[in-house]
Amino acid sequence: MKNILILHTGGTIAMSEDQNGAVSPDSSNPLNQFANPFAGKLNLITEDIFNYPSPHIGPKQMLLLEKRILRAADENIDGVVITHGTDTLEETAYFLDLTIPSKFPIVITGAMRSANEIGSDGLHNFQTAIQTAASDEAHGKGVLVVMNDEIHTARYVTKTHTTNVATFRTPTFGPIGLVSKHKVSFFEELLRHTALPIQNVVNHVYLLKAYAGMDNELFDFIASDTSNTNGLVIEALGAGNLPPHVLPSLKKIIDKNIPVVLVSRCFNGIAEDVYSYEGGGVQLKEMGVIFCQGLNGQKARIKLLVGISAGLKGKDLANFVSDAIS
Ligand SMILES: NC(=O)C[C@H](N)C(=O)O
Image (cartoon, rainbow, N blue to C red; front, side):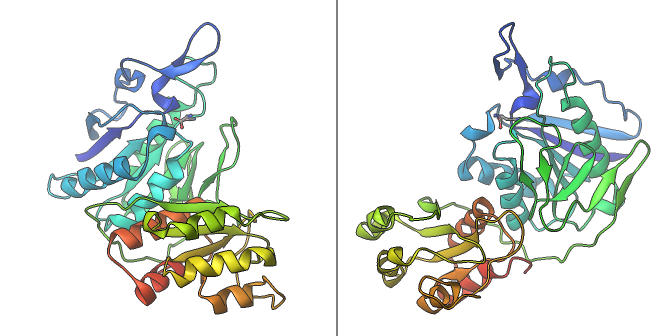
């Protein structure tokens, strides 16, 4: 019989609504009333690690999860399911994907409707996540996100809708599998990457979004006190361009050896050094900006943070961050 470790961290899946429709954490996790429908087939070992709405979760909590799952490798565990709030679920999923050499399936799920709402999706997502974690085929696929019967990679999935149960989508590539009534099916193979287990996390890795007429004051502010900055990710325009007047401020940051990573703010596609006009990708790359392909801003930030926390610097850090499929 397979042993599946369940780690609850909170989120809407562990919340209920009151008579006014306000949703908040329950004193006890409603999922703990879940009668194991796999009794006799799967042994579920449950731990309530924390009970946080996911906006309260950051790299420190992600590190605790990493350490707990690394220990599970010596505990005869065959798969892990994490329940999590959906707001930052993709960041925790990608953090774990980057830091845990995947010996067994690790699946994260959540809910868009709390436990006592009509059409609550929590129990269903929980059940399908357990099925996926118990599936032999889920081995070697990195951390997976299972929501609304779809299986997505931690690397590319993102939350796309504030309330809809079909919120988790993988732009450009799509889901890699499905959970149907009787089975878990995968349709795509993943390119593997080497995990970087880390012991500590750095802070002050910032994320800025570019916009038409972007002001340079935030760049100047970061450049003025780089002792408080470990790295910067910019969600740039289109294929990877910035308004030209922010370049002198950006250069000050790069000259102080702060790694600056660029992704596109576009929902689909990858950032590249295509344009050679002022502020275009060609000039940004020449300045030393690191292009990160295929990840969104929040994922690129997690990747940069993990690379820096692992002690990577200079070219090694740039290679780690720029190769989204390494
Ligand atoms: N659906 C959810 O879980 C959203 C909630 N605000 C959270 O992330 O904790």
